[in-house]
Image 1 (cartoon, rainbow, N blue to C red):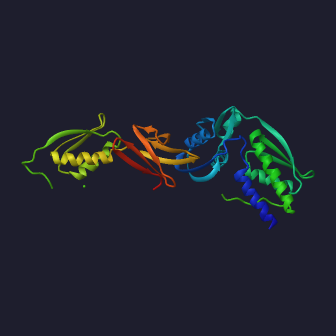
Image 2: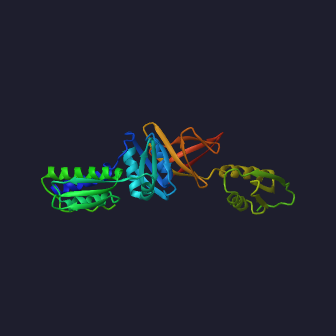
Image 3: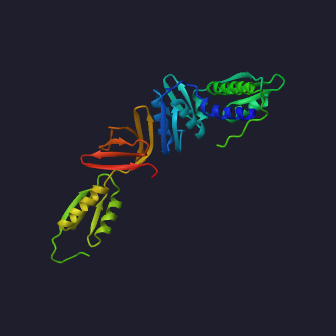
Length: 315
């Protein structure tokens, strides 16, 4: 039972004890699906009240749900689980790979941490697990752990070791090893055909072309990539149907990547043709205004005049 108490502590330390910069304590709720990591970090840093620089070394996409966490804890979890780090330089958070931070900003230091209630070997094992970027050595005779690495990482390692040792002492039992963590037939001769051209503003023109050809296979449609015009000869009645179809489907190809809530503030991370944008309710993208961000759902709505459309995340 006592050993279990220390094991619970280790997990708690992993989740709660890694932050060095003191960021905003307001709780955030986040859900991201295949969102660019660099954009997620940008939003998180801004919520903490900092300027943000994301190094090109930060690559990849992330999917996760985190609720009721301070910004700092969210930053620590996201960066460490994706293999990146951050460093506070003045009022700017710099995100990069560990190697990049070391070469540009880091100065390595040494710290000596003595432990009383756990073995130095067990303490060193914990450091390797929680802060693998820190190198550690053991002086078994003095039950001392020597830490070597970036100052920011050393603070985390020392905090972890001291709390680990304190909890082990309060449980009255030393722990000999570190627990593992797993982490749609017409064609009458008498009909009157009208030539018209309709502009495809947002959608993939080829996809719209395929749709209208399927709807009216007896008509000849063409799409001009350079002008974005869809042209054809069809009856006036057919053009009414076609225009309604095109208006329904000529919408921006916007992908919802994430939703983040912090107090009264709500942000949506969206992507359009490879470019990511963060939007607050009321802000516009491509002339479409974000009207609503759903509570408890991954749903929001854009509006332009009387037209609206909804995008859902991962559904």
